Length: 254
Image 1: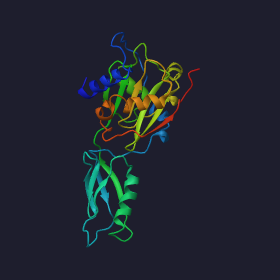
Image 2: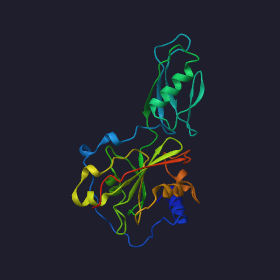
Image 3: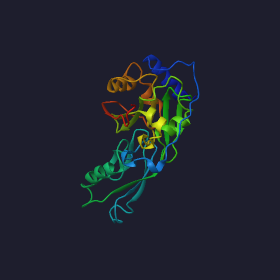
C-alpha cells in the first residue's frame, strides 16, 4: 500500500470511519457492460495539474505569430498565456477555460477565437477505499464503472454495506458531488443499468454500515480533524471543500 493510501487510512481512523483489519474475505463483483451504461451521466472533463493543453487562438496573426500553442498546467493549477500572463486552468472544463481566455484576450485581439483541447492527460486513476479487499488507487480503464473499480480492489469484504456505496466526484476547486449507489439489488438481479460510470480521479468509498447524513459525512471526511484526503490522491490537489452536492441512490434495494 502506498504512502498516500496509508495517510488516508490514518485519517479515516481519526474520524472513526476506518474498518478493522480482520475478517477480510474475497467477494466476486461482476463488471458492467459498457454498452448498457448511461454515459450522459458522466460529468464534463475538468482540467487538473499536469495536463498538457493545446491552445488554438485562431488564424496566424502578424502581431502574435503562430497562435497554436501548448500549455502545461503547473502544480499551482495555472498556465502561462501570452500576452495576458498566468491563467487558472485547473478545476475548469475546456469550455470554461475557452470562455475565460476569450474574455481576457478581448483587450488585445479583436473578436478572439479560442479552442482548448486536452492533448495529454496527467494521469488516469480512480481511488477505491473502505470495505474492499485491497484499498488503493487503480488505473482507470475505458468504460470503468463502480462495480469494475470495486472488482479491481479485490471485491467487497464480508461486512461491506453494498447498499450505501459512495462515489465522490470533484467539481472544480471547492465543490464535490456525492452519489450513493445501492449495488446490492443490482448485483443480485443483474441490473447493469443501475451501475455508475466513473470519471478519472473519482473516489469510491465502501462503508461498513449505511451512511446516514452524507453531507455531514463528506464534510468530516474532507475537512474534519484530518485533511489527509485533500492531499492523498492524484486529481484532488488544491481542493478546499466548500459545497457538497448529494445525488442518488441510483436503485432501490427492495
